[in-house]
Image (cartoon, rainbow, N blue to C red; front, side, top):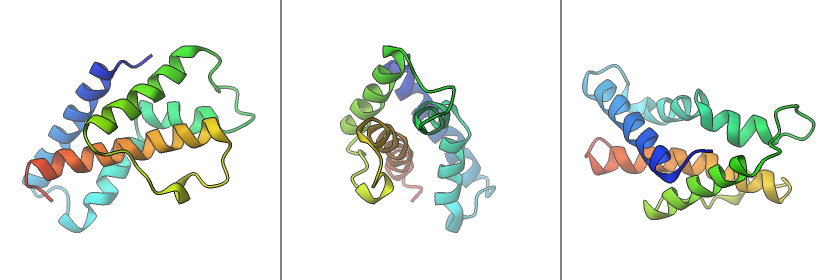
Amino acid sequence: MKTQEQIRKWIEEAVDELAAQIEAGEVDPDLISEAISKTVDNGWAYNLCITGYIPGLPNAPDDMGAFQSVGNILAVAESMGAVETNSGLWEGLRPWPAIASQAFFSLEGCIWSGLYDRGLI
């Protein structure tokens, strides 16, 4: 299970890393969105929120830790004002995969928020 503290720390580290890349000119300002997506896609969040909830995959969660982790992601995103509300991103999904998808995209919003707070976007 990922605690809210662990999630906040991951977001801070992701923002730090992307900020350094932006400031060093390693990320094109027009491609910040792509860099944020790549950061979230290549980590634990993708495995937890996306692949773990596709029906029929063997790694679907069967314990409360996964559910608590997703809830913690949304709690952190809410505290940052970054909960994703574009329901088209999870349209057609059953309730639990929809919630997990919302959590995944909310993490991207948290990174956007962190970069915005630093004046980088």
